Length: 146
Image 1 (tube, rainbow, N blue to C red):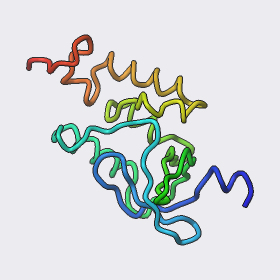
Image 2: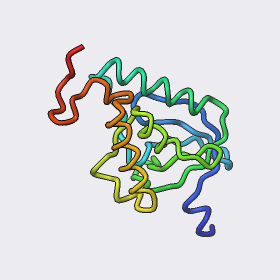
Image 3: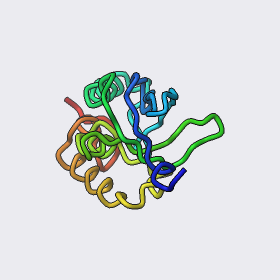
């Protein structure tokens, strides 16, 4: 296996789960679970935000869609953590830029090549109050009254 095969996985989307998990079928026919690297989507406790983020992920990654995964890590159960690309565009970065996800401070260093892009995208989404940032007062992380 060459270096490119170790870093990149060509796959087809099989399904999108809640939060930041997708299932793909690799070009070798293997079904794998992939966790989106360097980002966090709202979890189920934040129902409306979680639903909107999951819907956006499903829109960006419909079943049968071809993707390229830049493998960041892989755990003991063969679950890949990676950055998902469609048409040479990072889905992970797009989710952050549109306010559907936040930068995961614990793993952003795994995306060293694009770390600055993620941080700028989050700052812009926060300043424009896009997506999840609509309801959060950036200075206090409290709900903004409507």
